[in-house]
Length: 198
Image (tube, rainbow, N blue to C red):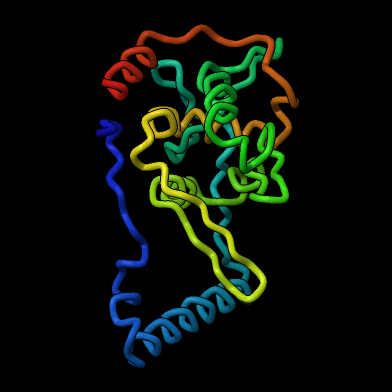
Protein backbone atom coordinates (compact mmCIF):
# COMPACT_ATOMS: atom_id res chain seq x y z
CA UNK A 1 0.00 0.00 0.00
CA UNK A 2 1.35 3.43 -0.88
CA UNK A 3 1.73 5.67 2.17
CA UNK A 4 1.62 9.05 0.51
CA UNK A 5 -1.26 10.73 2.28
CA UNK A 6 -3.39 10.82 -0.87
CA UNK A 7 -6.73 9.12 -0.65
CA UNK A 8 -8.42 7.97 -3.80
CA UNK A 9 -11.35 10.16 -4.67
CA UNK A 10 -13.84 10.29 -7.48
CA UNK A 11 -15.37 13.58 -8.53
CA UNK A 12 -18.27 11.70 -10.11
CA UNK A 13 -19.55 10.88 -6.62
CA UNK A 14 -20.61 14.49 -6.10
CA UNK A 15 -24.29 15.35 -5.50
CA UNK A 16 -24.90 16.24 -9.15
CA UNK A 17 -23.85 12.83 -10.44
CA UNK A 18 -25.56 10.59 -7.87
CA UNK A 19 -28.87 10.69 -9.73
CA UNK A 20 -27.52 10.25 -13.20
CA UNK A 21 -30.23 7.79 -14.16
CA UNK A 22 -33.19 10.09 -13.51
CA UNK A 23 -34.19 13.32 -15.19
CA UNK A 24 -34.02 15.34 -11.96
CA UNK A 25 -30.31 14.51 -11.69
CA UNK A 26 -29.75 15.68 -15.24
CA UNK A 27 -31.89 18.75 -14.64
CA UNK A 28 -29.83 19.51 -11.53
CA UNK A 29 -26.62 19.32 -13.56
CA UNK A 30 -28.00 21.60 -16.27
CA UNK A 31 -29.27 24.06 -13.68
CA UNK A 32 -25.97 24.11 -11.79
CA UNK A 33 -23.96 24.57 -15.00
CA UNK A 34 -26.21 27.37 -16.25
CA UNK A 35 -26.05 29.16 -12.89
CA UNK A 36 -22.25 28.80 -12.87
CA UNK A 37 -21.90 30.06 -16.45
CA UNK A 38 -24.39 32.85 -15.85
CA UNK A 39 -22.58 34.07 -12.74
CA UNK A 40 -19.27 33.93 -14.58
CA UNK A 41 -20.68 35.97 -17.48
CA UNK A 42 -22.15 38.52 -15.05
CA UNK A 43 -18.83 38.86 -13.25
CA UNK A 44 -16.99 39.24 -16.56
CA UNK A 45 -19.47 41.89 -17.75
CA UNK A 46 -19.05 43.78 -14.48
CA UNK A 47 -15.26 43.60 -14.81
CA UNK A 48 -14.86 41.76 -11.51
CA UNK A 49 -13.36 38.52 -12.73
CA UNK A 50 -10.90 36.99 -10.36
CA UNK A 51 -7.35 36.49 -11.59
CA UNK A 52 -6.00 32.96 -11.57
CA UNK A 53 -3.32 32.50 -8.92
CA UNK A 54 0.26 32.21 -10.14
CA UNK A 55 0.89 28.46 -10.22
CA UNK A 56 4.49 28.83 -11.43
CA UNK A 57 6.49 31.22 -9.26
CA UNK A 58 8.03 29.73 -6.12
CA UNK A 59 6.96 31.66 -3.03
CA UNK A 60 8.80 29.53 -0.47
CA UNK A 61 10.78 26.33 -0.03
CA UNK A 62 10.55 23.60 2.56
CA UNK A 63 12.87 20.61 2.89
CA UNK A 64 14.27 20.99 -0.63
CA UNK A 65 10.86 21.40 -2.29
CA UNK A 66 9.37 24.61 -3.68
CA UNK A 67 5.78 25.84 -3.48
CA UNK A 68 3.63 28.65 -4.84
CA UNK A 69 1.85 31.04 -2.49
CA UNK A 70 -1.16 28.68 -2.76
CA UNK A 71 0.97 25.74 -1.50
CA UNK A 72 1.08 24.06 -4.92
CA UNK A 73 4.37 22.31 -5.77
CA UNK A 74 6.51 24.15 -8.31
CA UNK A 75 10.06 24.21 -9.62
CA UNK A 76 13.04 26.45 -8.99
CA UNK A 77 15.84 27.15 -11.44
CA UNK A 78 18.91 28.99 -10.12
CA UNK A 79 20.59 31.71 -12.19
CA UNK A 80 23.40 29.29 -13.07
CA UNK A 81 20.85 26.82 -14.50
CA UNK A 82 20.91 24.43 -11.55
CA UNK A 83 17.48 22.85 -11.08
CA UNK A 84 15.82 21.77 -7.86
CA UNK A 85 16.05 18.11 -6.89
CA UNK A 86 12.29 17.40 -7.34
CA UNK A 87 12.46 18.58 -10.98
CA UNK A 88 15.44 16.33 -11.61
CA UNK A 89 13.70 13.43 -9.89
CA UNK A 90 10.59 14.20 -11.93
CA UNK A 91 12.62 13.96 -15.14
CA UNK A 92 13.84 10.51 -14.10
CA UNK A 93 10.43 9.25 -12.93
CA UNK A 94 8.56 10.68 -15.92
CA UNK A 95 10.91 8.87 -18.28
CA UNK A 96 10.58 5.59 -16.39
CA UNK A 97 6.77 5.58 -16.12
CA UNK A 98 5.04 8.16 -18.35
CA UNK A 99 6.95 8.81 -21.55
CA UNK A 100 5.89 5.59 -23.27
CA UNK A 101 2.40 7.05 -23.78
CA UNK A 102 2.93 10.80 -23.30
CA UNK A 103 6.15 11.13 -25.29
CA UNK A 104 9.64 12.22 -24.26
CA UNK A 105 9.97 15.40 -22.18
CA UNK A 106 6.17 15.73 -21.88
CA UNK A 107 5.85 16.61 -25.57
CA UNK A 108 2.90 14.30 -26.21
CA UNK A 109 2.44 11.61 -28.82
CA UNK A 110 -0.13 10.34 -31.28
CA UNK A 111 -1.36 8.18 -28.42
CA UNK A 112 -1.62 10.62 -25.47
CA UNK A 113 -1.56 14.41 -24.84
CA UNK A 114 1.41 16.63 -24.04
CA UNK A 115 1.58 16.63 -20.24
CA UNK A 116 3.85 19.67 -20.21
CA UNK A 117 0.79 21.61 -21.39
CA UNK A 118 -1.56 19.89 -18.93
CA UNK A 119 0.71 20.72 -15.97
CA UNK A 120 0.39 24.42 -16.82
CA UNK A 121 -3.27 24.58 -17.87
CA UNK A 122 -4.79 22.07 -15.48
CA UNK A 123 -5.41 22.64 -11.79
CA UNK A 124 -2.90 20.72 -9.65
CA UNK A 125 -5.64 18.82 -7.82
CA UNK A 126 -7.30 17.79 -11.10
CA UNK A 127 -3.92 16.56 -12.32
CA UNK A 128 -3.50 14.48 -9.16
CA UNK A 129 -7.06 13.12 -9.46
CA UNK A 130 -6.48 11.91 -13.02
CA UNK A 131 -3.15 10.25 -12.19
CA UNK A 132 -4.53 8.58 -9.05
CA UNK A 133 -7.89 7.46 -10.45
CA UNK A 134 -7.38 7.42 -14.21
CA UNK A 135 -9.78 8.84 -16.76
CA UNK A 136 -11.73 7.51 -19.71
CA UNK A 137 -13.02 9.62 -22.58
CA UNK A 138 -15.25 7.91 -25.09
CA UNK A 139 -17.19 9.64 -27.84
CA UNK A 140 -17.83 9.21 -31.54
CA UNK A 141 -14.41 10.68 -32.36
CA UNK A 142 -12.35 9.97 -29.23
CA UNK A 143 -11.54 6.84 -27.30
CA UNK A 144 -8.80 7.50 -24.77
CA UNK A 145 -8.04 5.80 -21.49
CA UNK A 146 -5.62 7.02 -18.86
CA UNK A 147 -5.08 4.11 -16.45
CA UNK A 148 -5.08 4.62 -12.69
CA UNK A 149 -1.65 4.86 -11.08
CA UNK A 150 -2.95 5.19 -7.52
CA UNK A 151 -1.38 1.87 -6.48
CA UNK A 152 1.93 2.37 -8.32
CA UNK A 153 4.53 3.50 -5.77
CA UNK A 154 6.94 4.44 -8.57
CA UNK A 155 4.44 7.11 -9.59
CA UNK A 156 2.69 8.01 -6.35
CA UNK A 157 5.84 8.51 -4.27
CA UNK A 158 7.13 10.91 -6.93
CA UNK A 159 3.91 12.47 -8.22
CA UNK A 160 4.83 16.00 -7.13
CA UNK A 161 8.28 15.57 -8.71
CA UNK A 162 6.71 14.52 -12.02
CA UNK A 163 4.29 17.44 -11.81
CA UNK A 164 6.99 20.08 -11.18
CA UNK A 165 9.19 18.65 -13.94
CA UNK A 166 6.27 18.91 -16.38
CA UNK A 167 5.53 22.48 -15.24
CA UNK A 168 9.15 23.41 -15.87
CA UNK A 169 8.99 21.79 -19.31
CA UNK A 170 5.69 23.57 -20.03
CA UNK A 171 7.29 26.96 -19.43
CA UNK A 172 10.53 25.92 -21.18
CA UNK A 173 12.43 26.59 -17.95
CA UNK A 174 14.05 23.19 -18.42
CA UNK A 175 15.14 22.41 -21.99
CA UNK A 176 14.75 19.03 -23.61
CA UNK A 177 17.22 16.36 -22.53
CA UNK A 178 18.70 15.29 -19.22
CA UNK A 179 19.19 18.23 -16.84
CA UNK A 180 22.93 18.83 -16.35
CA UNK A 181 23.04 20.62 -12.98
CA UNK A 182 20.88 19.87 -9.98
CA UNK A 183 20.59 20.67 -6.30
CA UNK A 184 21.57 17.82 -3.96
CA UNK A 185 18.83 15.61 -2.59
CA UNK A 186 17.81 16.92 0.83
CA UNK A 187 17.53 14.75 3.93
CA UNK A 188 13.81 15.60 4.15
CA UNK A 189 13.22 14.37 0.60
CA UNK A 190 15.27 11.22 1.24
CA UNK A 191 13.30 10.47 4.41
CA UNK A 192 9.89 11.04 2.75
CA UNK A 193 10.92 8.78 -0.13
CA UNK A 194 11.97 5.99 2.26
CA UNK A 195 8.70 6.21 4.21
CA UNK A 196 6.63 6.17 1.01
CA UNK A 197 8.42 3.16 -0.45
CA UNK A 198 8.22 1.01 2.72
